[in-house]
Image 1 (tube, one colour):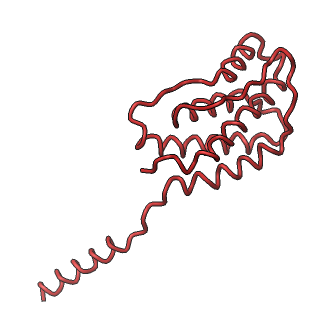
Image 2: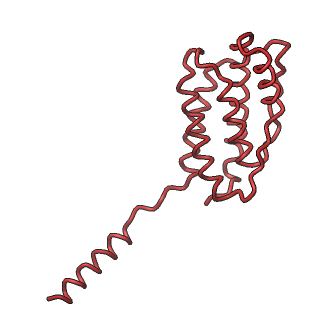
Image 3: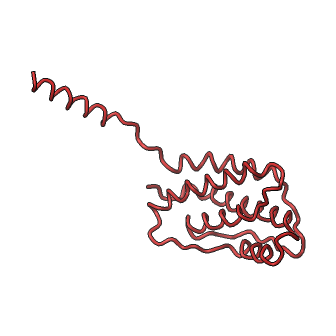
Length: 161
């Protein structure tokens, strides 16, 4: 009787471990987020920003860490006072969190470089945070849009864990 009970527990253990649901590929969770975020970002118009704030979207990013740094930077510059922006800010945060998880297992020495455009916006913000709130926010939305579009175009070249 004891050996039958042991065999039953062993068989139950093997079945429960062997039929576990595999973890989803991180890319498969990032792609829908990218598409949804682009739809939301494209709802905001491309705005010709004041002459004071140049609009030079990044040409390329150096890996996941620079994507995360850039998206976080742009997200911080987007004002909460803009209409319909709360969901965009939340989805940018979700995307950066998912990318960070993927980055943890793919990038050995992350490079944390800021796009020049983001540095310029942050400098403008630091000089006078209240003066150009809307213009800086719209420029940050445009910058985030550019980065998400670049990420969408390069998602299949990204190594998975």
